[in-house]
Image 1 (spheres, protein in one colour):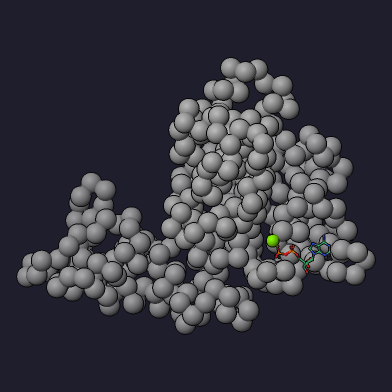
Image 2 (cartoon, helix red, strand yellow):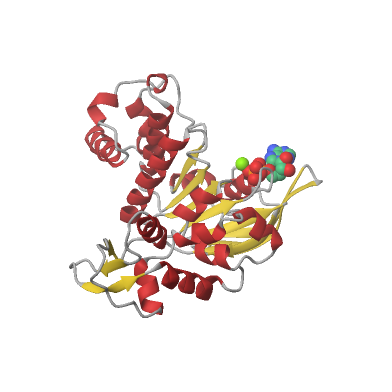
Length: 323
Ligand SMILES: Nc1ncnc2c1ncn2[C@@H]1O[C@H](COP(=O)(O)OP(=O)(O)O)[C@@H](O)[C@H]1O
Ligand SMILES: [Mg+2]
């Protein structure tokens, strides 16, 4: 869907912000561009909707060069969300959210229906907020409206530049989870900028880790955590990468790879649903007397038990090349 073909960006003839970038984003994927400040994330994003020109190479959107596309038309098909949500202070929430539909000449009824749907989607009551102005909303609420606005004309592609970066951690976590729910339903193709590895691990289908305008690794979160391509990646994803990767593996993954232990009757072991993560399993194990958890599937059928030993065995198997 989005193909980066040898993309290079040089500012003012001498600042090389992006160097020979090659990667593909598939339909319906959420790709997070990650890396330290100044590594070129925003530049890369803004070349997609041509807010920045491309110095060398090209970006293909659905097989069509963005350089040769009509900018106005293309931007209508690309939702764009930025950290400072970019809402117009003198326009009410409904008008802000409906900017693109308005440009497209939708009638009032269609716009109102769309506004109502989107506000429900981002968790705001449409009637309560319709006539309010941005300054009357909290930062988190403004970002929700920012997301609603980007989704207004149902664009297939979304570009999101640290959309939750300015929010406090609790609200941020909440919005990440909500957005993941929305994405499950809408399956947009999303390029999402972040400098936060935890955000990336939690949300991304794939992570593009950049340094100094170059791609360090492009991979699924579990792969990046368990098989970092070089020492920069290993250091960036952190010492606790084993712990992080445990939240990506489910009990079911373990049960598929290894034989579960028989359930012993003696102690009062808790049950664990096989779709929960190994991180949850470990925390349960550490907070009960018994040394095993009884694994059950969604129908409540008992499939055997897991122990700390078994989890350790599984992690060594999966992560052995990097621990
Ligand atoms: N408009 C600009 N003019 C000149 N240099 C720029 C401009 N925008 C960004 N840069 C430079 O390009 C590099 C990448 O910046 P940016 O894409 O904003 O990084 P990030 O979003 O990862 O923090 C930095 O060295 C930055 O100083
Ligand atoms: Mg940036």
